[in-house]
Length: 378
Image (tube, rainbow, N blue to C red; front, side):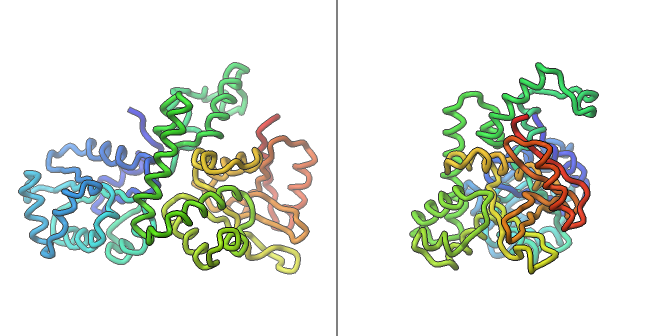
């Protein structure tokens, strides 16, 4: 059974009273993790409920929350005098679920295991209702280490620690990294070797994202504008975000652009990166950069330069490890990524020692001494 890096943390939290909430974009493996987590519960007093099924939502339409509990006992043959493990998938489909979970959490012996595809819903509704009663775990697409695991490729520990690889392993990793660069890290995409199937799965993920996840939050008369906006912003990954320019391109308001981009970010489609500044007279202080959270989606949406594609992939790998910013002088000189405010990264397709010298000099403005070049082609 293939497991994710996050799973060990989920297992530890399974032993706590707090609700375990797994969130992340559609098709990242939340349902698989939820079911695996439930399988690790030794008790039989447990149930899995998928709220994508309309029939399952009916249970939670009852206004009397005690009656909901009684229905759950009867429908799933649960024992009230034992701890109940209640796994609910795709919680965003029932808007009043936070209140229900809070009431049942406070009044009955229930361990909740929950998943949802929208951080907007979870942060804005669950934060108030379940303050102190939950822990949120974000399941992202596969990082390259997980990608290799899913490809059944293991790295020799001694070689890895020395940062040396045999020529055969290096050539194998190079081919796999090219695949990762092009098709990203959605588990179903990684597990098929057929290129057309990869593209079909990615298109299906995009369609489901627009027609199900986004449709929950917007007037879908705007569907055409939403798709056009996603196409436009995808073509501008790694560039500074210009709301006015995008609005003019699509003939919609700047406010609409900003609102949609915020929605795309809260549903895990993209991430905005803030600029880091110490000297407003010489540095850019307000503009954000934008990256997509998976390269596979990027590549079916836009034909971006190979350098931008590589930078976007590095972003997807760094963003889960800590805080990311970028740095830019008004003269145009930039640091691609500043990690946790104390490490600088420059991302290039090809590079030489002069690039490292330039990066080190620019990093002095931020008092950063750890500087790294990440380049694709040695």
